[in-house]
Image (tube, rainbow, N blue to C red):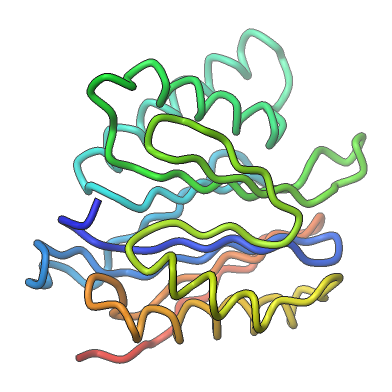
Length: 204
């Protein structure tokens, strides 16, 4: 889990949800790249964060893309965030005896018919689901992210406040972790749109 480094955090706001990751790809203490994204869109309103081993990030991104496409074709509707979280869990559990070294984070809004409610979840590397009403963290800086998020997060944050909170949480936590950092990317998902912003972080 610590070979390539990287951290992801997701937070719930008022009718919105945010997910953010750092941009570092490393070989332990050696930085290889500073533009390695770990958060990918699954549908227009579901995003998936994949902190962990970089080769497994690429593998699982394609595997989930295939499985979501198959679901959409079979069911003739878009996948719901909770259904997708269970899909992620079962995909990881299939490989539990030789696991993918990834701790996925799912963030999204339910469909408008279901009220566009915010949803976040995370799993460990064999797919044990953790649903949360406030925030979830994964990656090498997770212990620091927990501490900062506990202090900064409040219920019913508006999208702009949520962006500020998740940004400060991530930037302050990765400053204390040698395996994460080099800037960050934040996605704020609302019923109307997704706002993506890139943040500059400490470069040392």
